[in-house]
Image 1 (cartoon, one colour):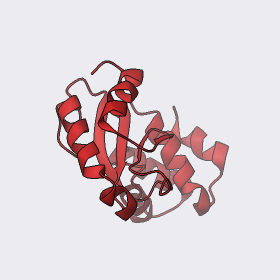
Image 2 (cartoon, helix red, strand yellow):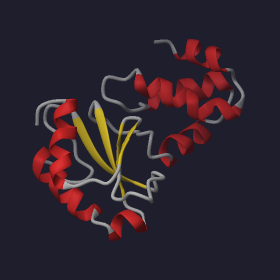
Image 3 (spheres, one colour):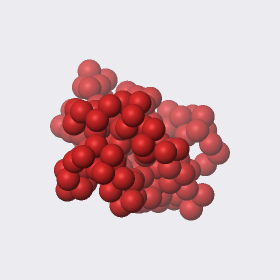
Image 4 (cartoon, rainbow, N blue to C red):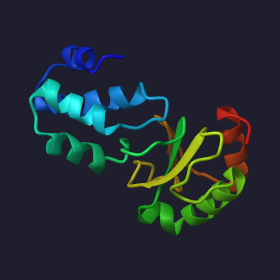
Length: 151
C-alpha cells in the first residue's frame, strides 16, 4: 500500500486525516502507525508532523505502538463501569492470558479501554474491530472470542 495512493483516494483536505490514518493503520500487519507512516501522511497532506501525530495519538481507534490483529476495546464509562465492566475485563484478562493494555503472544488480540461505545442501554459493552457487543457476561465472552480465534 502506498500512502500517496491513500491520500489521493481521500483527498488532501485536513478533515480527511482520520480516515486516511485509519486506512494506513489497517494495512499494517501489527495494526499501528509507525513514525514513517505519520511522516509520510504529513508530507503528502502538506501538514505538520505534529498535527498528524496529535490525531494519531488522540483517538483510541489509532495506535502508535504495535497491537494484535483484533483490538478488544472495553468501555470504561459510568454505565458500563457500574454494570460490571471490571468483571468483563478480569474475565478477558484470564481468558487471553494478558493484562489490560497487553497483546497476546500470538499477536491475535490486544486489550484496551475506550470511552463510551453508545451502548448505554445495554451495558457493559466492548468493541472488537468495528463490531459492538453489549449486555456482556463472562459466559458470552468465550463464544465471542472463539469467533475470532481459538483462545
